[in-house]
Length: 319
Image 1: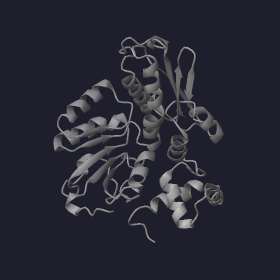
Image 2: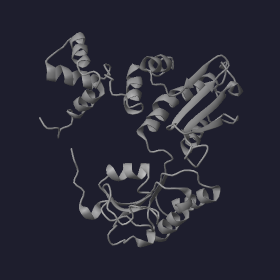
Image 3: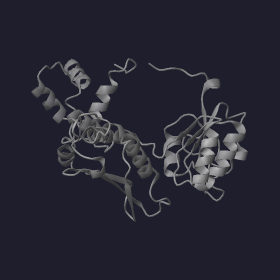
């Protein structure tokens, strides 16, 4: 089902950092970006790029609030621009999505002040992969550690003391990245510490910068006699072997991790009941072996076929 939003109710996005990697991704996938802000020396200044409706400008002061009705500011730039973004949002009472990292404590205090006046979302990482990683991979391990070290349990012999738990995050990025540790690593650290509310020891973050690296994050949990090393691995069989050991994680969860976090194009989640049912309906088969034979024909693009079949379950999917 689709919902038609009246033009006067549409959110008009003002995108700061419009020509950066994240900014380009946002503007190319969003129909509501009205203004794009870039630096004064940007070669695309004054041009209409991506899905941005107005030509690129270099200052928020050039934004016409008559055009950008019901606006939202998305800051995907650098901390150096934050004060101007803050002033603009505070003065005009405009909500802010802060999608940049590396801010000073003073800037974060100003962000808290802004949040008392308008809606503010601080999002160090906007990727679906990180969100999935936190809720589906990290959370079961946090729950497992809590079950082994629950200081609040009465008359239950704890398996470990919380002091036995050592956690380290290793983040690797290209050498052009300005902040270290990365905002995502800090966000993961805070997420873990919040989940392990009774943990006093510090979580170590190691930052690596080199010329070739894309963003990678590895989280290592060391208990007295166990190690859970959640690092980025590209070998599918190794990923299954590594994650299936964690209580609460099964094959379906691993399949979703491979599809939405690792962007693997050749995954068929045979444990997904909705997917199996739509194959049975469309291909008139009822045998699991036949379903596997059909899925194998889609290799090396099983994921693409899976996404299409999921989409076919929507009411507005063309027959």
